[in-house]
Image (cartoon, rainbow, N blue to C red):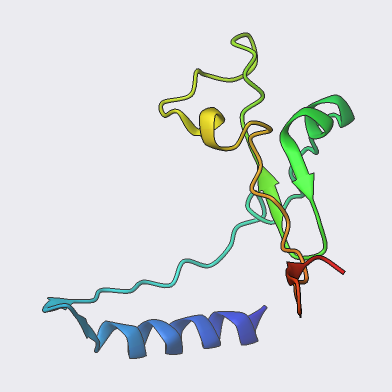
Length: 102
């Protein structure tokens, strides 16, 4: 824990000497308390099933659309992504007849 405290303070010193887009940076290390180190309660499997799409490359959490669970969408995202999720990346192969998913 002392190593993390020392590293955190050094990083704060370095970052406090920086300037980003004309603004000076102020960094302060806050040592984690016992409360912050506790493992949070995991969501239910039902919630996970409705809200999470997990693949090898991505983890997406979306609103389920049910008003008792999630607030309404603020955009028309559902008209573009009907399932609500970004599609996973697909490998593409160039063939004489055009692109295809192998």
